[in-house]
Length: 339
Image 1: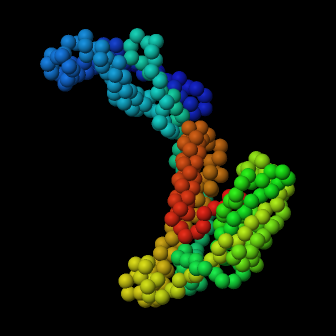
Image 2: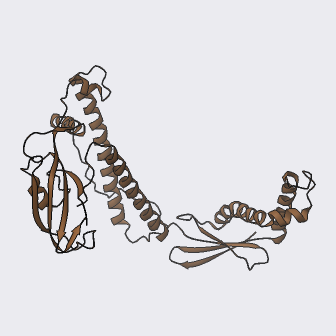
Image 3: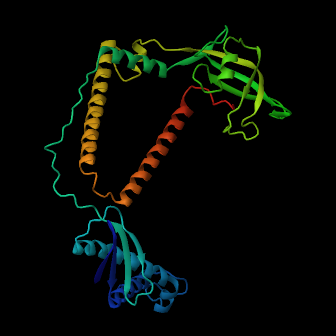
C-alpha cells in the first residue's frame, strides 16, 4: 500500500492511497469464487455456475464491494501511518484512472492546540435554589396544561375559545369566492390578527361582526398581501377555560399514588432541583467553553466541523418543530384559523 499526503492549505489535507493491482484482483477473484458457490441461477446446479456467467451477472457489484472493503480496511491504517486526525469523516473518491486500485480521502485535520491551561481562567459559578413559589407556579402550569373548555353563555372575553365563520372582501375580490371559511382561536393569545381579536371580544354566540384591516406585505395569501380588506362573519361557538382543581385525582394522574399534596410538592421539588442542577452545570460548562474560546481564539476551526455542527443544529430545530406540531395535534387547543 502506497500513501501520499497533500497539504491543501490551513487544515485541509488530501490523502491518496494505492493498493497493488494484484491485491485488488485477488480479492475480486475470491469474491467471484464465493458467489459461484452460493449462486442459485436457473439452468445451473448450485456450485456449477461458470465463472463467465458470474462475472456477467455480478461482476460490477463484486468490484464495488471489494472497493468499499479495501477503503474500510486501508483508510484507518493510512491515517495512523501518517499521524493524521480527521476532524470529520473524510470524503472518499475512487481514482478510476489509476492502474492499481487507488482512492483519495479529503478532510480537515484537528488543529494542534497543545496542553490546555485553565489555571488562569476566572469563572463565576452561579447558585440558585428551588423556592416554594417555584413549586406553586409549576402546579399552576400543570393545571393549565390540563385545561378543558366548556360552553360559555355570556359575552366573549380573553382566554375564551372562539369558533367563527367569515369571509374577506378586498375590493372586488372575495375569499372564499363562495360560502364561508371557518376558524377558531383562543382570545388573547395573538394567534389571529389583532383587529379580528378585538372585534370578537364582547360578542355572544350568533352575533355578526365586521372589521377593517390591512394585510401585511408578506402575507401568505398573495392576493391579499399589502391590501386593505373587510372581514365579515359570525361567532358560532364560545367556550370558556376550566382548569382542574389540584385535588387528589389530579395529583394521582401524575403518578403520586397517595394523592397527597405534600407528596406531590416533594415530587415537584425533586424534579425542579434536578432540572436546576442540570441547567447550572450546563451554564458552567458554557462559561468555561466561552473563556477557552476567548483564550484560544487564534486557533483555526475546521470548516467540516462548523458544517457538521450547523447541520446538527438545523436537524435539532426541525425535530423540535415536529415535536411541537405533534403535541399541538394531540392537545385540546383549537385548529389554527385560516387568517
